[in-house]
Length: 284
Image (cartoon, rainbow, N blue to C red; front, side, top):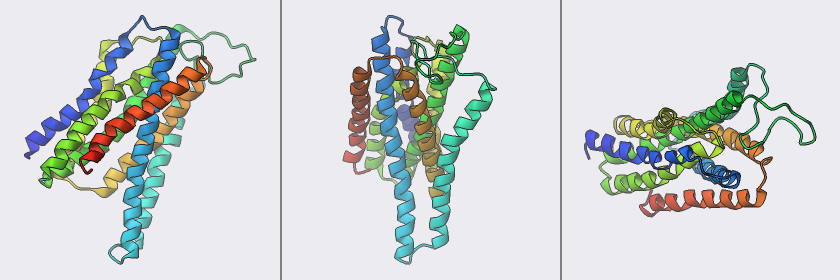
């Protein structure tokens, strides 16, 4: 498979995220439906969290096994372990610090639909301006897109490495599996927006941020094989996804429809599992 073919198919795998992003433009959804969509998104993100850490742990564990068998060094295993921890910290705690500084000390506005994540239910909180609510919702959605993009860059690396090694069957299955899988990730971006209706320009940007890295990663993976680079992006993605899950969960729990939300969380998680099975079926 040539470099151009790999890049084109990597783009196809990544940009299927645009299939689900237009749901963010719907205006006829009830509060119940929006809670369901947001919690479905949390389920998808929960699967991505498990998925990226599974890959990250595998890289670190392989280095430990190599040291035990005498084919690797202890220093390399320690370096990868520190890289995993540092990347995870940067993606989670680092993102939280950045978010706090971006808000410049202002309390975060309520989640669209009436939820607040900074006050107890018994405390009266003045309603935040609609512009602040919209800004927070769109910032949260774009943060999710960044986290998904980090995850998809690592997936693109896998596509590029397989194609460069002439493992055509594996590369094809990876592309198909990631394409189907990425089609559900758009829900993870637009689900937490609540009743905030994003512009088409915002959706296009979010799609490029979330899906574009698959395309870039496939080109990088075809040209460069770097285990530490792959581990770093998995660790960053895992930390960022965990941070976003906490933010959305904490906000949505005050909206109501708790049982429905939990069922849709499971549905989102299983959607990630089922689409990932296609990749596993191909021997990846």
